[in-house]
Length: 85
Image 1 (cartoon, helix red, strand yellow):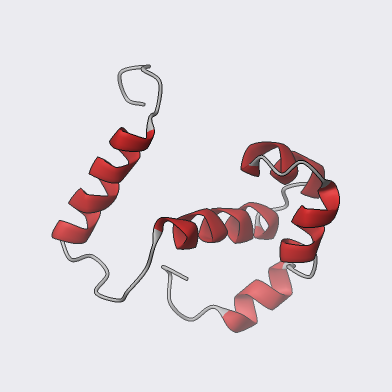
Image 2 (tube, helix red, strand yellow):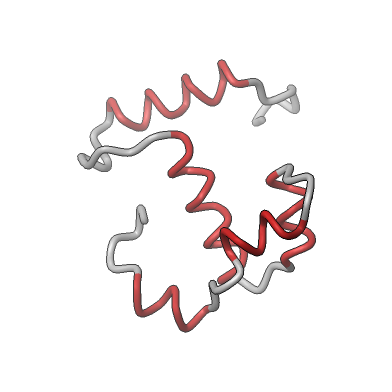
């Protein structure tokens, strides 16, 4: 975090609620959407699948590949029209 403290679930919920309160995005979404968005952007930016597995916390690389294996920069650029997707 900004103050070099551990990032807890409570702090994340507080940050998400502040974001929602500012109405920067009016659509329906959950914390899993935030996680998925991170994963897609990580891979689109050239991140490695094995590193994503470690960050996301999957026990098996097969789970990570099953969910995000077909993501590439080209596919992200053609599919995503909303910056919050």
